[in-house]
Amino acid sequence: MDAQDFTTLESIRKALTTTPLHRWLGFEIAEVDFANGTLTMICPAGGNAARFDGAPQAHGGAIATLIDSAACFAACAMLGRGVPTSNIRVDYLRPAGGELLVAKAKVIRAGRTLALVDVEVESDGKLVATGRCVEVSAE
Image (cartoon, rainbow, N blue to C red; front, side, top):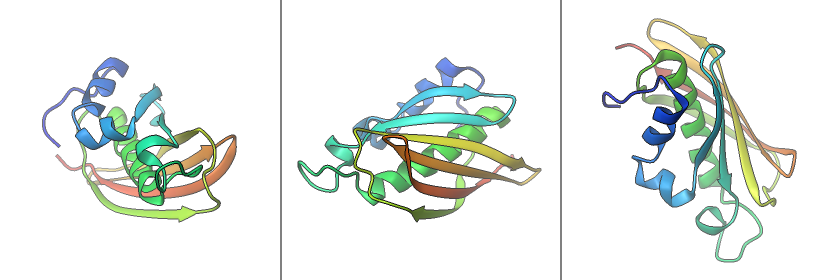
């Protein structure tokens, strides 16, 4: 990632909108705890994230992208700089049939070279997917 500012909620929200895919899917950052490495990101489950036009469920690819993005931005917030994802694992638990996807990311460990981030995605208050991402934290 390039030299963007990740030190305030406003700057992180601005950085999110620089990626066309994030805008297209309607991603928004709801909250960030910089000290604890947590971040909540939301996405409409319908529209561009739907499995198909008019589907009442979100597409798995949109959920995976939400997990990847929430993990990346949680690590960016904690480290204060951009970090790329080097590995992602996604487990789908049930169809995401609600109106809104809510991803809650938590940095588990931020080391000298790698950061490990866990993400849970809920829809209508039900856990629909989990993910684990490894972010490259080396400068």
